[in-house]
Image (spheres, helix red, strand yellow):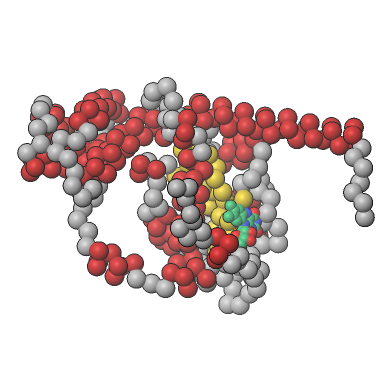
Length: 335
Ligand SMILES: Cc1cc2nc3c(=O)[nH]c(=O)nc-3n(C[C@H](O)[C@H](O)[C@H](O)COP(=O)(O)O)c2cc1C
C-alpha cells in the first residue's frame, strides 16, 4: 500500500503538542535538578552530606591504589576536615561524619607509615577523631585488605545460570513476603556501585495488598498481575548529591543499577520480580510522589513488583540477540 499522504494540518497539530509536552517535561527535570543539586555550592544538609561522601571517597580511592603518593590530595583532605567539622557543629554526628573521620584517620596513618608530610593536617584529623570517639563500631571507613582468593571463593557461583533463570515474573502465588527477605534483598542492592560511593538510592516498599493497589493506580504496565503481587518497591535516587552539569543524568544511572541489583536480590531470595516502568510525565510523577510522600529532591527511577512464584507458570521467551550483536571485542581504533 503506498504511504498515506500527509494531511499537513492534522499531522502538524499533534506533533506540536508532543514537542511542547516534551519541552515542559524537560523543564520539570531541569527545575528539579537545579533546585536539589548543588551546582553553586552545597546548602542543604543532604548536599553537605554528599560533599563529605565525595571527599571521603576520594581519600579511600587514593589509599586503595597500588602505590599511593605520600601526602597526596592535601587540599581536598583539608576541605574534608573543614566540611566535616562544620557539619558536626550544625547537625552533630551521623553515619556520614563517622565514615569521613574513619577515612581521614586511615589517611593520617598511611602518611605516618610512609613519612608523608601532611603538616598540621595530622593534628586536625586527630582532633576530629576525638570528637567521634563515640562513633558506632559497625561503621567502617578507610581501606580494607582483600585476598583475591577469598573474593573468588565468596563470589563463586554459576552467574550465567543465575541470570538465565531470571525472568520478569507476571504470575504470583497468594503468599505474603517476609520482611527479612525484603531486607536481605535491599542489603544486596546497597552493595551496588554508586558514583563516588554517594549511595543516593532508596527503596520504598509496600507489602499490604491495599497499599500496593493504591500505589499501582499511578503505574501503567501491571495489568493482569498487579493484584497478585506480594510486594511493590519504588526505587528513588536523591538529586541533592550531584554538583556538576555533567552529572545531570547520574541519578538515573545509579538508580537504574540499584534497581537491577534489587531485582537480582529478590531473585536470589527465591522470589519472582518484574520491573514496572516509571516512564511517565511530570503530572503523574508529582501526583504519585505527593501520595506516597516522596520528597521533591528524589527522582523516581522505577517500581518493582515482586512476590512468591507459583510452582509452575509461563513467562515470555524474550529471546536475546546474538552475543556478537552486543559484544564488539577490541574494535579497531584510528591509527
Ligand atoms: C525499566 C524497566 C521497566 C519495565 N516495565 C515493565 C512494566 O511496566 N510492565 C511489565 O510487565 N514489564 C516491564 N518490564 C519488563 C520487561 O518487559 C522485560 O524485562 C523484558 O521484556 C525482558 O524480559 P525478561 O525480564 O523476562 O528477560 C520493564 C523492564 C525494565 C528494565
